[in-house]
Length: 59
Image 1 (cartoon, rainbow, N blue to C red):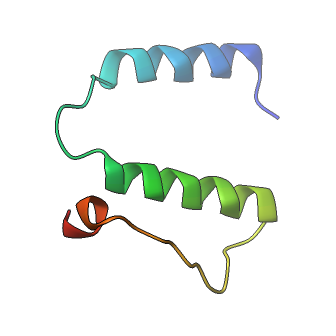
Image 2: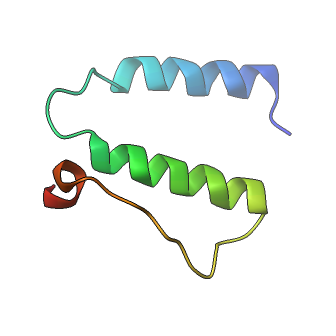
């Protein structure tokens, strides 16, 4: 478990480095959902099925 100080440092780093995205963010949304699913499972999934719209697929 991380300490409050470590948490504060990570949040400060994110606030410094992350800027609003303009453009193609849909593939990142898929990646984030995949990462959260793996976190919830406690391991990397053996298989992943994603239903995509044409807009996400083209990116």
